[in-house]
Length: 509
Image: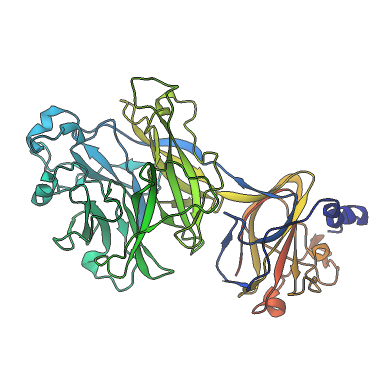
């Protein structure tokens, strides 16, 4: 596979005509090891020419849940999903639909706000069932898919707070007892949270009677959702609760715990240089394909009176944020990750809300779940998809572009990239030493041209510009280039030369 020199000169020289943008001063090399690196921000980039970060929207797919049970109503929302062995689990809000359920409701509270948490199951993340779990009695029967609160815990709800929405997770802490393998935080009144545990994700009970988080300062707001999970990188439990910013804009705060009982003082989430706006739900998740990256799929509330004045003045859509330390989030992408779209029933104050959790439902597909048509008879949960790591890419246009990473120290032997190009586009990769000089054998003009659409393409360089031809196959025989023998353990930089291409992530393996 030889490239004519005229094209090679264009390939390696076009960017000399474009201005160089230096993004950061030299610093200590990044220790990336074999961890996958995402381009959710410009942290990895040192210089760039004619490339830019581009947010990619999730693609709406099929409806997976509708309101078809008497313990559900048109506020079908607050979805939480995770993989559990050979199946997937989904938790969501179930609510008494009208006054006929008033016998379960404390005096002075509305039956319409008397909430339960229900559970659905799936083998593929597409077709979901609502199993009869026989745990919670509703209207004289336990033949339902409700899991919380049980009769024994209903007295909690007399504290003048109707919400009992929980966002369970499967605890991957290797030291956790089997009886506490599943966890969640539940509201106890309006300003306190109790820790719940379960051995199976179905039968829930308080870890202790006393609240584990209560009356946070400087403001005590504890509206759901409060998202929690075990972080395998920092080896602690993390929780994201809601917050007031200047007592007029909604935001978030982060707490940590070694044991799910004793929690740190809250630290406010910040947005760097990004715009501060009303964000009502974090739906935080530690992205397991790239440990150390925290993602938010937040509900943006945009105040407006341009729609039906009889309804609450505002519209919701879902925006994407990311963080490398769990506290300072990049909110540089102001366009929606999931817009309200053509469905007029989504153009309301809670029209769209992303669920918590990401499922990898195929090697080339991540599934996310969100509620739509909030407050309408057509309320439902829909699946959306995006390619693995495909939230943000480095994009080079038809004219071409390039960028160079910061110094990094890696482990492993091969370089793998997640990318897509047009039919006439390409990507080439060059390894630079600490002084910025190309490493012999790993120059851009020695890199086999990469084009197509792949999640895990291994980058290969020619050896001495020589193609080894199998006379029987008439194909180029390519041996993987062992970058580890040349560069592993010492500072290097990567230079990506691109045309009509998107680069989503890379890793050394």
